Image (spheres, rainbow, N blue to C red):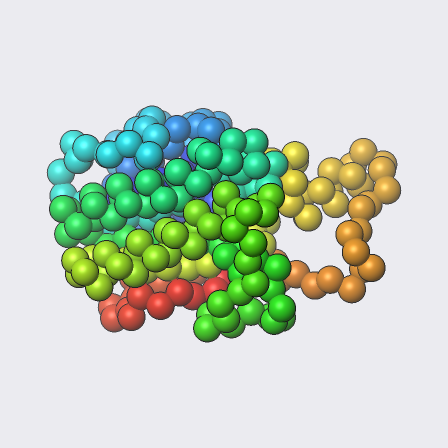
Amino acid sequence: MRIIVTGGAGFVGSHLVDALLAQGHHVICVDRFFSGKKENIVHHLTNPNFTLVTHDVRKRLKNKFGSIDRIYHLACPASPDQYQFDPVLTLETSVMGTKNLLEFAREANARLLFTSTSEIYGDPLEHPQKETYWGNVDPLGKRACYDEGKRAGETLCKDYRVQYGVDARIVRLFNTYGPRMMFHDGRVLSNFILQALLGEDITVHGDGTQTRSFMYVSDLVSALIKRMELAIDDGAPMNL
């Protein structure tokens, strides 16, 4: 298959690219390198089944690739330090970028998988969160550029599915860890590891009773591919 991975040079995206190439697919990696790193995919640059496209998904992506079968839409700064650095870019990537990729999928008759986030639940009052939970959100909060952008992206996927018949699927990622994480990305595990390596006190927020679910990146990649390849899918969000 010919597969587009947006955000393919990022932490999760680059591992997904690795897995898809290992399966024998032709992979088109689309990234603007805001948070992605070329070093994450440099080992594929001589692979004839790999194409790197430097592109901002907030602009329409022209199909110069021929037939496209799948689109994994991962493009968006994901760590708090990254997405709060330029909140307008973050929001536009999730809204305008998702709309552009859905239009691409519609024209190419391709299946699209949108990576949403647990942040769409805001400051949840239910633990753990079920897919049916609507959340407790603050559209004006510090994290709103990411939260609300992903919520709007989910709505676009649902509406393109209902209105235009696009096979759009939604997964909500929680806490993923593994190689290629950036130390200064502001997430809990990388913060713990960095503080430990520097010999600093490890910061525990709150009273220490908080819980988190963590998934190793290779397990996440396997789940993304399995969700994409389900023969029949109702488009409902799935927590990973």
